[in-house]
Length: 305
Image: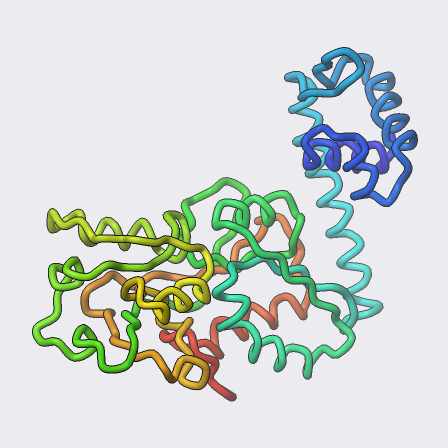
């Protein structure tokens, strides 16, 4: 049994059992991947794949068990290599991060700038996804860690490190009465058409629960995963925006007014998640430390904190 066979198995599953896509992911020809998979089955003496004709459609029970240990074996090999690099090339490597659009655009840029000043030889890769995808990418070691803005349930094999908390703001065109109305409650918010995040993004579940506890139903006329899309339609007059406060920019959003809603909604936590058995290199620990010490409760970067 060879590591390349295990890599082909993992790539196949992550490619939806498309051998061509798995080969592209591994930068191999299709025939090489097919050969790896066939040899792996032959060596183990049991069928790992469900088939429809010549097409692979899924894993057998044995295949699922082998996949679990294949991932673990490859992760352990990566840890061994990381330990070696840490002692030979401490300040070089590639840091793979997964996060949401809001974090990537509004939170990480100044932090990444500081990180690059400290580690100019470390390359960065940033991937985006849904909260569920972010956890899956970390769990399957497709990234070094994920920055999650949603509540992370206790998941076996995952370590979650709390970095900072955040809340929401209402945004509207300058002069809109909702920006200054007093008193202002969740009930008053329900009087207006709203634009906010799709369920599953940036605390959307907590958002809906806050209204539901009071028997209220907000008039959400448009949902989006991208904060910039929300702002666009607020500017078009479609409704008021409810966004993560950290996604408001005093510079770029000067045409929109902002009202802090932290007194109406519970605080959310941003966490870094990674595989519990992952060996963290020094520069990975530094990046997490920057998230914990350089980002304030409003999601803003704090110089030299």
